[in-house]
Image (cartoon, rainbow, N blue to C red; front, side, top):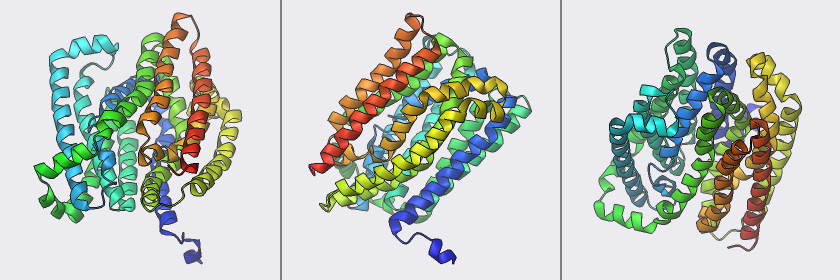
Length: 421
């Protein structure tokens, strides 16, 4: 009977493996959130959100995005040289980052309006290093189809965070949320690297300076175009977090951060897991000259049905749900969630197929489209504050803006694949 329940296709098994890991990894932070919200204050959550925003701001380009090319070459020899190239770039940036923080700590804290972080600024290079290692070896594991290991790394990282943050908070250790987050990142990276060492370390002998330079030139669009795209994406998320903290305060940022933490669970579970497997699937189909349109259309239709049910339910119960689960003082986060649900709904649909422009060599156009929203979100926060709008009014503007933008991007992707570009 149990054999009948197992997915028959390799693709379905891979998606299920990643989705199981992602589900558990996403469920743990949500499960411990009612504990954390009773140990830590909204301001503590705001400080964590600001710290993660700074880390994300750097780590998104810490490898110049070369790690995304690891799955593309036909030979493992070329791929391992991209791994080496990514590691060299990452280590160089981390060293420079540490020196900048060491020499200009006070100036940076003043510039970022992040005095509440204080000496935890010195942990940022270590968080960036762990994030970079996760990115590089996650893509290598994807290439080698170590989906079970990717899943294990996600779960272990989440468990480490889920255990350490409440314990550190219970003993009133300052910065427990930040220390716990770093602990989880390190453990996740260790598991991915351990699998590489056990299975693939023989490939290290294939690393040469010549091949690294060849791959660097071959995939130059990743640092020249995709890194700009990724940087503009993180400008939207991390930049907006910094601005909200600066204009509206750490407590408001804490409410906003918790609302996103809950709403992004469906996106993380389905979008991330499905997206990783689809990246390889789409690449193979495109290389073989297969028609992507009917396949992508079916995927998006399924996602639409799933998301309509999930987000419709969340919309009606969000404020009461947040108040019940996290405590009455967090009802505000539920009200923010209601406003952001349409935005996250469209993100849910787009996320798993967002790699298609890369595969179809349309990175530049995708970058220009995304740049509109990525610049628009910080501008909306700045103008809203300058015009005296409340944070609620600013969030309404942001949500509406991204619904329109994501709809345009979705239609553009379907136009591309229908033309079989």
